[in-house]
Length: 92
Image 1 (cartoon, rainbow, N blue to C red):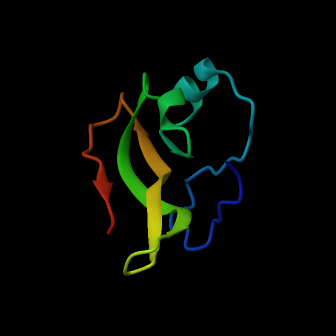
Image 2 (cartoon, one colour):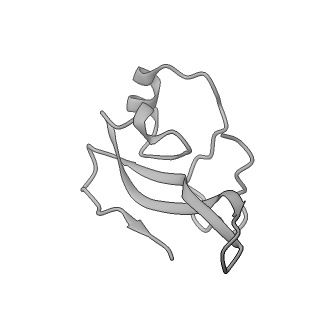
Image 3 (cartoon, rainbow, N blue to C red):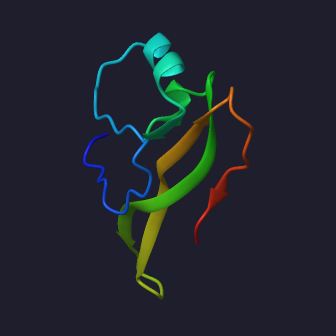
């Protein structure tokens, strides 16, 4: 997943990287947090601390309200398990 922005970055010590195709070992040793759409790929070493649902599809039906929006978890902020554990939250 790419396209993240550094807008609002408040800590000059943060290191932002959009490097792709890293091995799992490189994730484990280089990063404290990940922003991903595939949390299962990193669940052994990272835990979700925030989950943002997003639009999956729009369905039409023959009954009221005739349109329904289907949401799913699209963005996962994950923290390295070596750090103090957090509890995953979702914004509504």
